Length: 211
Image (cartoon, rainbow, N blue to C red; front, side, top):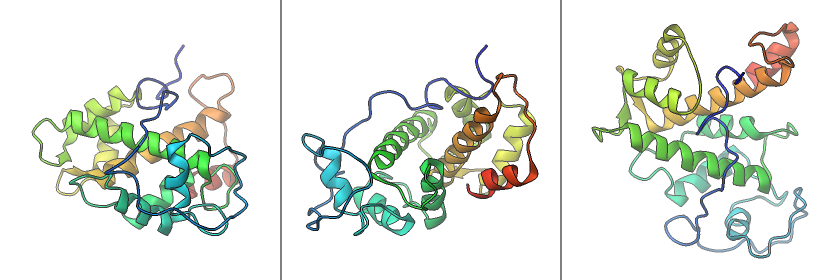
């Protein structure tokens, strides 16, 4: 039985990642220092490596402010508004498996893949090219991503992330991040994959307050 709300096209990013290559995604300049990068990785032949080191700090990781600056300069949001600092924080939290509040190179690559997939999905469902998605379009998008949510849950999501009934790209990404992160948090504890688990209160707070 497929896990409820997990799997399917955009919910789980296991496929090939779109590479930025050159413009408009490649940032000008290359980081000139020689930090001890936390990810054990050979940079040879990977076009993402120079892109990452151009924005990473001396510690070889990217924090929320660096990520916001990086994504704004990359142009990945296209004609949509740049990502807010809060959205960048939860992007990092989604992939911050070592709880440093930052992301290393492999986490950065995974995020880039997710953002490209979410943007493609957003553009696909935004059929009227309004730059936003409405309730029925979000329902369609969530189904495409492989999540099976009740109408009541969809309504809750719309209330949380919409402005006057419309969800902008930044809020759409924030919603996708939280859906993925919380589903993965739940899934890791649902050992029998039955769709329900028992939580310790502290464990629940740690998992949900981090996102």
